[in-house]
Length: 225
Image (cartoon, rainbow, N blue to C red; front, side, top):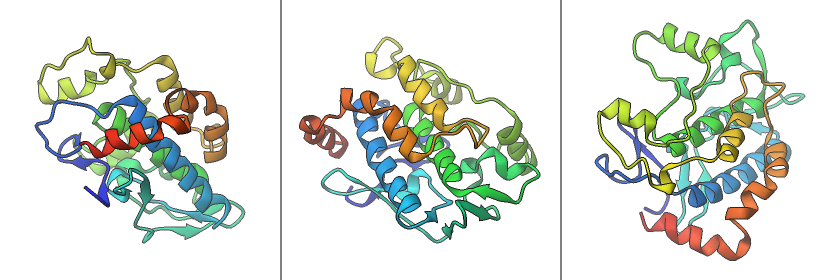
């Protein structure tokens, strides 16, 4: 699956086949996250670019197991870290897009979208999905709280009416996993972590699973799907 997206989508997320029952393992997800944070940090601090459309289909996997951020068609140069206008994919847009402002912190926009991607990797579903009108979707993103669950199968089971193994350690999230996700999905952009803060504050969280000596194991795990 060289240069293929990390997840495919058809009502819910999967790696290769919609009928697959497994979830990407947490150690592999953490390696992917670290790669993505380094990419996002680079475009924000070195190129002054806001991607504006970070989503699983724009995150590609190379044959050596590294992720690549693709499709900069909606990207914009930031001025004083800010961008104007709302572009991107609705379900991955941040809550501030649906408020009264017309100027946004570009780095925090991308971090929200990245958080939604991580949510999709954790649970294989989206926290906000259009069920009725676009207006209702926008209202939910702006005003509704995001649901979290330590059992990774919880939301997918309700969506598909399928029973999954709830006892497997691979299908459980730790408090640290969920707290990291909440850092990125803070509805207040001023309190939302940027890429540098996420990398620094979660350094122990990453190193526990992804020290350099284990990188090859993580890469092989990703490529085995």
